[in-house]
Image (tube, rainbow, N blue to C red; front, top):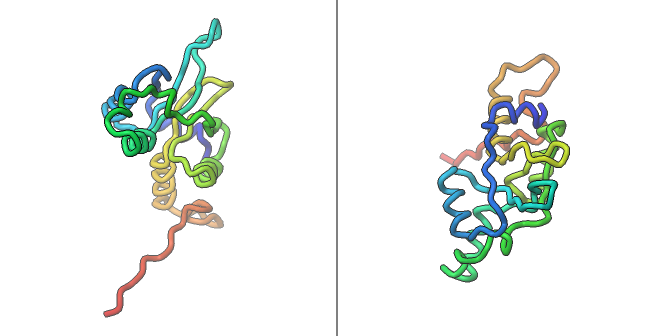
Length: 158
């Protein structure tokens, strides 16, 4: 399955935030939208808006743990991840899963010709894995996608 297939199951609306906004505003947005990360945009001359990073609930927690309530007055640009890992519509779900694991991230912006078209979360990938595991097996193909299998549950001695 491709990223494009997963994107069909998601809302076309992608919440974003500007890097000049406060951490408090970003936390409010994350809570209101019930999301774990938001793509950060900034105006860039006549070309319009450019994706410049990603800001997650982890960024909020880390900042508050280090700086207390004063962290809420910092800007998103102060704390966001600038080295953003992204994926494309034609990437496979297996590739997305590998990227998330390799880079220890839970959200990947989906870019198409340098334009933001969505965000995939680890929940989207896991939901795909669960649906794939529940689907009737096709002869000659594994019931679970590569990397989607889990270890058997441990049994306790009687």
